[in-house]
Each structure stands twice: as structure tokens, then as C-alpha cells.
Image (cartoon, rainbow, N blue to C red; front, side, top):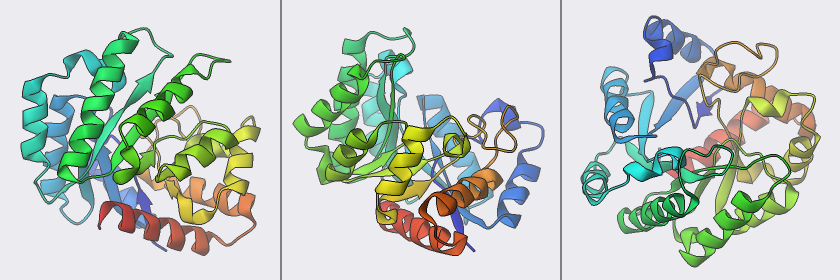
Length: 262
């Protein structure tokens, strides 16, 4: 069985002491690829160290997180344009909108997101998108869809990272050529809306992730996450769809290979 973790941050300090051990756990669990999305210029650059140490396992994505959108500059754009030509860069992101925190003005987030969508189209790489809103608000989700349509982001498509929307948002995302990435939250008992999305959306439109070191799946919720735990997400998806774990692994891995060109 082969699994791909489309979103993990093993280049962060949380893994400074046992990074190699965590990677060995992933390999033993059947993980054959791990994508490291950037959230700042510095994190993008540090991701390349993992690619060099483990060239058969790691790939990078170049992005500025919405909470750091104020750091998007013409100089960063020029740097990303050059770095995007590297063979180990497979996407632009993690970018998007985050209205949950008040770290960055909404207008600044919109500017950064639009710029990164245009960069993705320019260099012909898919996008990795983050979206989060305050409780009982859908403004970020609505704004994201509007910007994607205006910028014609469907030309490159990509992934809705850590998918947390409802069925309507899921269908709209798929129509815009974006796969839905399920992570540890799918395994939580108090996620009925997400469970409905998992049942209703075809497996051909789904991929797996961990978002390590966060959002650890059951039965390890509350502890540090790691790519090996992507198997628990796959098991929950198989349960919700009433299909075999092998089928989930095979189809989601195929989806990622097609999307990122592995």
C-alpha cells in the first residue's frame, strides 16, 4: 500500500530532535511522497534541505500563508518565479484566506492570494489553498471562491488544504478544478458535515494529508502529528465510503500523482 501526504511541515522546529526517526516511521507506514508547503520565504528555502536529504520522498511548494500576507513583495515574487523552475517544486502555496485570526488585514490577504494565483498560472503549477473563518461565518469561503473565479484559477487547479467546508463549498471547489484534502479532522466524531462531504464527493476528487505537526487524527488527538498518521485518515475515509483501504490508497495516490506530476 502506497500513501501520499500532500501537506506536512517537517522542516519546522517541532521535529528538530527526531526528524529522521519521524521520516522512518512514515516510510514504514507506506508513505511514498510528502509535500512541504511554504508559509514564509524562509520556510520555503528550508524545505529544500529535506528534498536534498531524502530526494525520493520530499517535494516542495512555494507560498506565503495568508496570516503572513504582508510579507508578499515584488522581491518574494521574483524569488518564487526563479525557484519554481526547480524540479522538486510541485505547487504554489500555501496561500489563501484566513479570517479566523486578526493578524493580517483582509485586503492584504486578497492582494497576496491574487498575486500567487497569477504566479501559479504563469509558471503552470497547481495551487495549495488554505481557508479558515470565524465560527458561524462563511465570508472567507465565499470570498475565496469569488477570487478563484475572477482570477480563473481553474486553469491550474490544485488542492483545498485541510478541507473544512460544507457540501456546497466542496462541490464549488471541485467545479473549479480543486481536489479536497482530508486530514486528521476527518477522524473526529464531532465532524458530521465533513463526514457528509467525504461520503458525497467522488474518491477521484480527494487526496490525503496530515498538516503535521497539527490536527493529529484519532487515536492520537492532542499529540504531535506526523506523516505516518495519514494512514488513519485513509482508514476513516474507507470506512465512510464503505470501500477498502487499498482502494482509498490507490486512488488518492493516483490523484496526487496526476495533480503534482509525480
